[in-house]
Length: 100
Image (cartoon, rainbow, N blue to C red):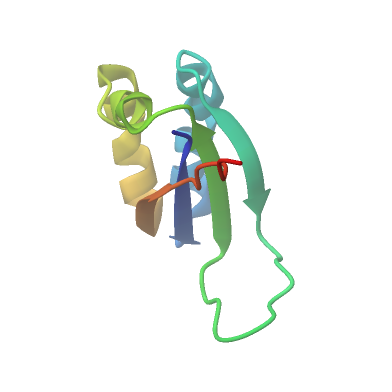
């Protein structure tokens, strides 16, 4: 089942965060994920959306998402994100197709 990772990121230090960005796609491309959206100016319909960046990623399975997130390659660039931003990140299950 497809899973989605949604990340609400508040970037405090663009210079430090840029180091994370420099390595992100190289690491991400090692896994079978799809980068669906990276948005800094979403059209807010309701509520407060105080983060400076929202990211939406899809993976074919939860195991694949966790393999990416826990990989040594991703863990090597993660300190740069931690130095430049705070984040709230969650894995969401996709919906299964209805049976007919």
